[in-house]
Image 1 (cartoon, rainbow, N blue to C red):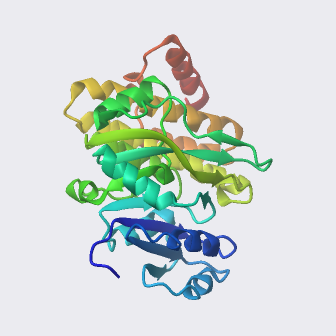
Image 2: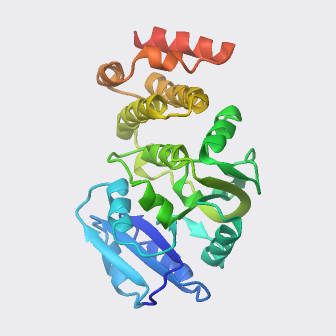
Length: 312
């Protein structure tokens, strides 16, 4: 492996035997950028590790661990990476040719700490739609300015596979993924932006997110987990808002917490089975006074009243 690594590509994999080989080969076909590819097999039972072992390339590293969840898998790779930049991918999605090199070149040219790219959502009908449309493309903002823009425009592109992040920025601010089973990419992105580095968004679409209806997130018995994860996310965003020194950005973080509370309430009303347990989690972790600070419109007020009536 070369001494200087330009990009560390991190892929957590759980039962991805049917898709991981193709994605790995696409990444390793790129030779104009120094890549290390770290795949973390998170306790797969379908032979995922066997597929990876069959690929012989010194740039490929495999970590095998007992099932701990996708965020623990990413933390394991972060602890070992050597690249100047980090790219996060999912094992069941797709990329276009030259994906890593194009991102690397764009990231260098941006002179930013975090570059948010665009991508495609691909449904079962193969129809594609852009992941985001309201970002300030080609403009470098501080992390706080980016938070303000995203919250104001109601578009928070937190997907990890959109991000190319400078490794030194992650180390400088001791960033890591919080444990949990769902939605913690939202918190990663909040902390990424709250650290107030240089952010740049680019309308470059090279990633295809494939909506997998068979994934665990669509299982009926997983909706309670997702709802409780939203509670944890909302509580953490409120804590970040309370701790951040910049008073002007506090209100936007409280607003963001309120937006995530809308997602929570949708799950709670329509999908959650054990409503009493989820309600208890909400009451134990979130104060209504904190959410009240995020009210910024009549729509927010109506939602707040609805939230109180449904939970209390």
